[in-house]
Image (tube, rainbow, N blue to C red; front, side):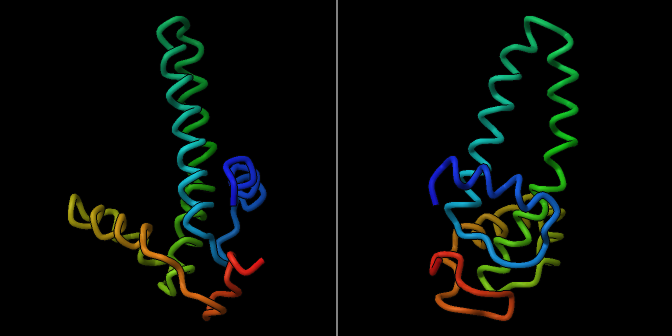
Length: 118
């Protein structure tokens, strides 16, 4: 999945907690969101209004980022509840990073078809 396709899928699956998300979909969506925040962060020095837009965008993308993380966990055949592991400082973050970087299951698993098989 390419960069623009991943960003479109990110918004199409705004609150979709079922199914699977490939590594490329996950990481390209993260990259797109952080690039937007980076650009808004630079512009926030020029205008205080952009600072508030940045905060509003943070609230808007919170739910789709969580749903994307859950679908990425589903791709590795883990329950979406594993996302709560990120609440454990440092150790939880490292474990989640390993889960998100791990290749997904080949073929179907209990959460659906392989997103790379499409």
